[in-house]
Image 1 (tube, rainbow, N blue to C red):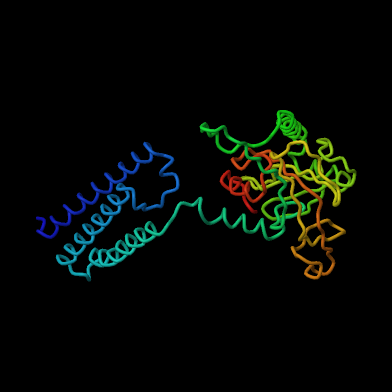
Image 2: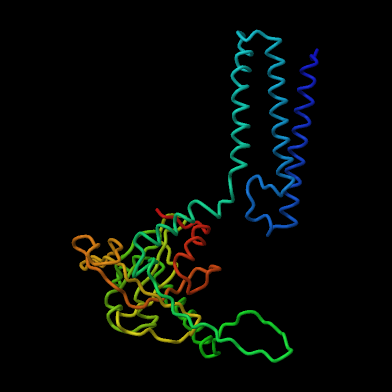
Length: 330
């Protein structure tokens, strides 16, 4: 025969379970109807009623179980085996429920924090370089000239990019030729056999071919100066991009206009015998013993992995997307 306290406990369990399931269904419906609006919401978003209903149901469910445990403890001596089990389970259930609600209230969507931000920080400030992504780089992009409007006519088209058809075709052709030529380097051992040597090993692994770098044949897809690898989900190095390099003092080819983002680094400490970037410093005095302070020539990334950042984007813009695709540090 159930006691009055047990009956109340069972009703609380049923009500809590119903509210929890209703909140879950509500949340699924919201995500289905508005996926863009909920893509980056918190675990317990204030504006999502389904989350509140789910949390309330969980709280009521836990309260019901706790009340049921108390009712059973009042009927059975705590010294018995079942009584001791209930006495031990009660604080565990309450603690887990409180922890779940607290974590849900403070947690945020993973895309805004954590590994992505850490990867960009490490890649930008650690060994990025000639060959990666340093914090001192110069972008060359021409600003669009304002076009005068006719009096009394308002017909906005947004901000345009001043690019000619010739520049657009040349850029598309280069990207296609790079993709075809780079296929032979998908296995890093092939690149090493051809003379490429590792120069950075942070999130991105840059390999430079000294012969191709010194031959002044920029944008020659058969003699690409640098290859960019990242460690894939299976732990092996995957080719994710290439980088054309111009020697210091030389001007890079102007073929794509504002579509192309050439950049340089002026803070590298390089080991001259290995070409490895060992540290970053704004002045020669800050470089470790055995390294030399280097100001690079202009460089241009061409990414082989399609990302919203763009095919010529800076490395720090591409790293978050690579992480979301499963690429990793080690």
